[in-house]
Image 1 (cartoon, rainbow, N blue to C red):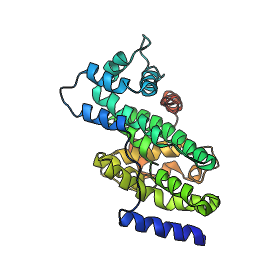
Image 2 (cartoon, helix red, strand yellow):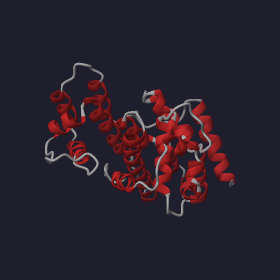
Image 3 (tube, rainbow, N blue to C red):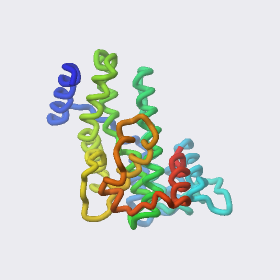
Image 4 (cartoon, rainbow, N blue to C red):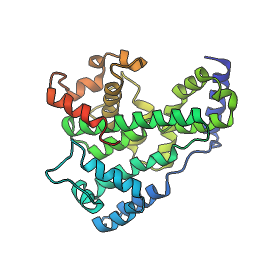
Length: 273
């Protein structure tokens, strides 16, 4: 580890421990959606109004409903029908996840590019987590997608920090090392601050533990397998991990020969774009 990476890592861990690190806040619209969804009596119309304030978000939800994985005979063209089709809980979780993109804004081109890459990969992992959840577990696909969308959320504060520390920004080896070492810890911290459900809070810290054993299939397992799937056939170190030796993969009992399933997984990679 370079001297710079070591120093930055030390500073960041200290800042986290002392609550000195400025963490991004949950976007306003995400808080409004969450608040609305917490009302057990909420109607589709009310939620439509809240989500509808963000036109880009509305368009994304309609697109998700029309994706190959969820498509019905009739194309959905309005938000109200999209929410009716998905259900209130489902729509709000998906919307909260997709609205995270608003936090991914940068001042410098280097950071902008890195943030785009992280978000693009998160969208892919979220889509595949969703498809795996539907086919191989009794868990909630919207939660699985939300878990995929936030599994690398801890990278954000590090990139924001790097924008204020040029020496780190200029040294990509050190920056990547710090991201690798610290993002799980920061992701966990962020999701706690944002009051995410406990089963999602643990995802950033545990999804890279490929020896992890859990009592039953959980959201970490789904995001872990989705991450491996999205890195296969790339030059990323994760592509060298033998999926068949990973407990989560065995637990899901995935059949790699199942052509329909492979097609579903491939289609799901782009369902949230």
